[in-house]
Length: 315
Image (tube, rainbow, N blue to C red; front, side):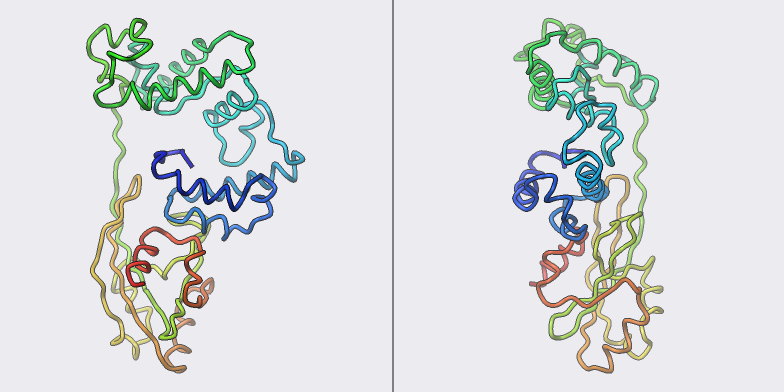
């Protein structure tokens, strides 16, 4: 959950998730919709799907016990080199280096490392430095304490802006601090290019409160989540809708939703159907993965944040 997401955002999700899935067996036995439902609004939904797949593989392929080395952990879904190192260091005291944003920043400043971290060669070089700096102690908690210490140093003292060098416990070792310009590290010149995408959403309901939601493909935006039917633009949405029912469509105020690498410009249309004839005309024009959901049932589903925002605003 903490991959690409701040602790303040994760905390409430984590507590609910652990209460529902207290161990790897409970998560393995769960349905994907239950997992995505508790993840709804947290974003980066591939993390939830990978976590679910990982739990099933651990239970079915490893007898319910996680592998104890970083190399083996990387064979599990959703666990890359840095996450594998974190698990191995914290849980099994393996001498391996994690490499999250906080660690990169601390080590870049400590060493005044001038390599461009947008380049893989430079990142690999700094990671080698991180490995060389690991404690040699055989104490059973040496790696967990060191790893947590470096992470916390980056999160609380060696921050991206206005690092608190005056209280830093490794100030005397830090080359960037002695140079008087810690903020110039880490060096990363390549900027993420943010694209823009337009989406038109069809909010369709029956006057008894049932909603039409479709489960999206596992790949792509909002993969595996339940969503209103989506279209590239308003024209496509209206053309897809039965001609005789188009006067019932009501356009809602548009809004913007920010993803990591993309800005979504969202247009939403709402229609409320009342009699049997109207209802029978609609689903055949839409996706086959859709279904009507009774009032309140959507609360437990995995929904994209914009969909949940629209529905909660109408409650």
